[in-house]
Length: 426
Ligand SMILES: Cc1cc2nc3c(=O)[nH]c(=O)nc-3n(C[C@H](O)[C@H](O)[C@H](O)COP(=O)(O)OP(=O)(O)OC[C@H]3O[C@@H](n4cnc5c(N)ncnc54)[C@H](O)[C@@H]3O)c2cc1C
Image (tube, rainbow, N blue to C red):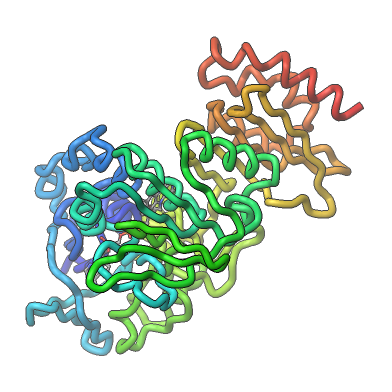
């Protein structure tokens, strides 16, 4: 009899797993469950819907007929409880479903840290479709907002609000913007850029209290300042969405504990994507990987193991991309906020303060370890190959044109970058 595989979560990791299973096995039964939306959509595009760049339907990468054609059954319901001894899921509407193999791809939820007033109307995070609808409702006709938390989602929220002419105060606890990830120069460039948009960026400032009776009307900060506002965006990170698993036998920590095969301690139960926590992180990686492209890699890999072909997670070089208002950001390999003992760096910034390029390399071997590009697009496969092949930094500089994504545009800076390299290294 064909295997009955059930996946909870239709985000990038769950969907990639479903698609990979179908590619590898035409016979298995695949059920994809989500309480959020019936059809998969690109979470990273939520901001563009709010800003009016596209309708929500255009965030769906597949046509609605795709699922039936590939015999992936969609269930739009909330799983309340899992009984692993009977291999059964219980939905909030009282119905139940059996599985042979279960994949938990249940993603993240926005953090809240128990601030007074955090449940007032007009206070919310941004993670799912329901948050987008709430944001539409909560920001109708308002003129001022506060965003708390200087990560990638915070910047997006600030840009979204700004696009509707809403004045934004942006509170960031750290000294440097996204300082746990970005080196100081890049961090300062982004701070300047955010301020150029008229955003009231307040560094080293924390939220103390949210005020209002039913609806928010002000906040106070750790610097005892009161800021009147009609909306508060809480973007202080995300954590694995695992509340509904607490009554199950599946071992949990911050996320669902797994080994390198995405297996939990319970047989035939796997976890992938934002909700999965490796018991042992791979060298140079974190044990929670909460980004889009790693979710995809998790989904592709676990499909092999579920179908009996055990495959350990062996991710390629780290990659991530994002946007800070107008400045696009790409990072490849290992670029840490501060250099490790064996590392040296080269940094170039354009005089307009909106483009920069960094290489981190090994002091002894000269092999490149990572790249940061702001406002410049690089070719992923070229940068990736340089890192994998441990190419010497001088060779990379000589061949920089090979990484041009847009040759005409990039050529303009190449000479300048090379000159800066010669100057800095001499
Ligand atoms: C606004 C925003 C911008 C982002 N931008 C970037 C970016 O630029 N680059 C990047 O790499 N990453 C970005 N991310 C992060 C990225 O989107 C996530 O890492 C990724 O979507 C996680 O995918 P996932 O499949 O693990 O889970 P999710 O996409 O979270 O999907 C999990 C699904 O499971 C459902 N679910 C959970 N529990 C249950 C249950 N009990 N019953 C039924 N359904 C359930 C949820 O409702 C959800 O639909 C962004 C995230 C947000 C919110």
